Image (cartoon, rainbow, N blue to C red; front, side, top):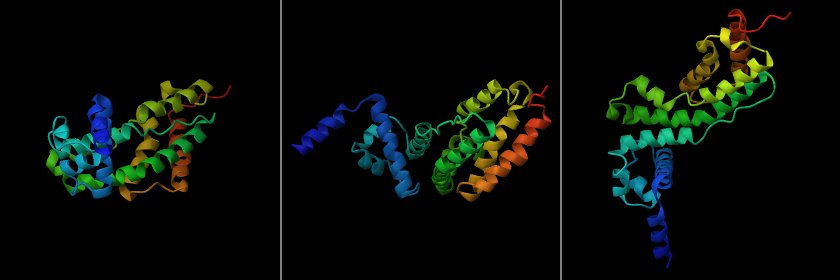
Length: 208
């Protein structure tokens, strides 16, 4: 009875639900077994499905792994804080992003250096973009827009590169260290690098 019920449940999985479960299984297999030991067969076993179901969607394990990385990143967004203050918002966001994504970076970069990079034919920059896709930037824009609306900054005067800089530096640190930057490093990025740059490009309205 259990076997028949399980088979019935498997047959009922369709479309986006099925694809999400397959990608979740692929990510879990990547975490537990690593890229070198991951196979289409092992993912199918973990997902309680047949290997043909995977091959209908992804031609090989490299395509599957890249899709699993993107799926995990997109389904685990970091909440955008709203403390009422730009500095506090940035500190909370950079801390949350680094804590949430450090493990993600370590796993995906391990995959890249274990063969994913060579097998896919992607350049290091392309792999970086897939792993570190700035999915947070549209959400982070909320932090700056709220600060603009409060009169803390003038977004029309601040270059996009300056706005991205705190997050670029945190991602760089995680790539190098494979762990979240310490609180002091985040403070330095905000107080000694970002905020002075904002003032220098006249992004803070002058008080009357």
